[in-house]
Image (tube, rainbow, N blue to C red; front, side, top):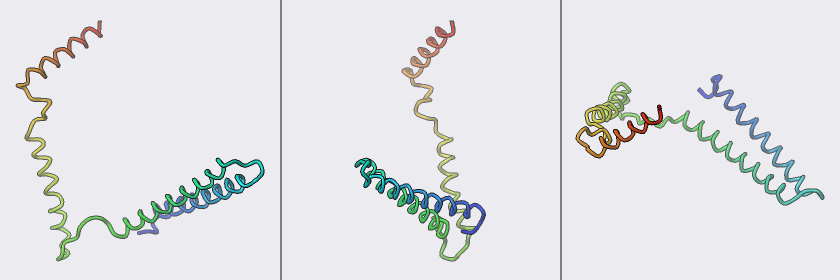
Length: 128
């Protein structure tokens, strides 16, 4: 699971970014401490360490989500019934959305009809 080719690529990317960001942070910090360095270099050094912490946070979060998926499990372990329960609200919501027209498509709305005819007139004017 965590050692599939896709995950190995993610691990390599995360750790190469960590190594690169740590290197850049140390380089900026030492440049800021030198006689030609500025306060801006020191802040860039701190910024690279923040980038490192962010990469590590996302990497750990991805691993946790892979190990413990967010899908709820049923108490009896019946995965077939769990997928049926998970699919039912989605299809019910889609059916209710398909049954009712959108508010902006009400055929009895005179103001909407006037606006649509105004837009059609503008489109015809621009074509000429």
